[in-house]
Length: 228
Image 1 (cartoon, rainbow, N blue to C red):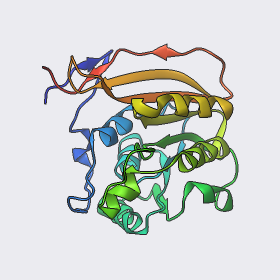
Image 2: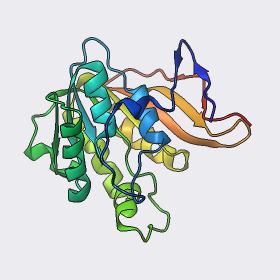
Image 3: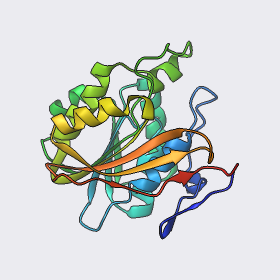
């Protein structure tokens, strides 16, 4: 697939190739959403401590730790994927990345409030569809609205005042996510739609916001993952 430029930057579909990842098999593989989140989550100079909620095999966290030289903490509730995330750390010799086998609902037991400069997440995108018969796909891609709210609760708890959150979300339930973010005083600041082709509906929405930020949303130029 061909890529298009976004502003002065360019989204490279293969940017995660610099990361060594363990083979989990056909049930779980990094997707465009994984790569997009890694690309869009570039920290600024003042953002030194990041956390990823629901890291799966840790590809995004490993990329940020390796490329941007920041301290990254990741959490993954699925024990099977958590072990692969540990392998990702080992394969890439990352002393500045750690991973914990916990759910979002448990972060208060492990971390202090407002202890991270940035929170990033690619949460399960299917909140109402029929669950996949594949157990691993079901664990990583399917959830309910309660679980989604737990991601947002964790984001609010972990993020410093004025800190940045970055999510990649499905358009289908985007109104739910926006409503919940605002209820939790997580103010959306930038929105970037991602399309598969010029004539198709958006596949993803990249969202960047700030805890206790002011009102003001910028809709950025879209990304097209391939030409028609």
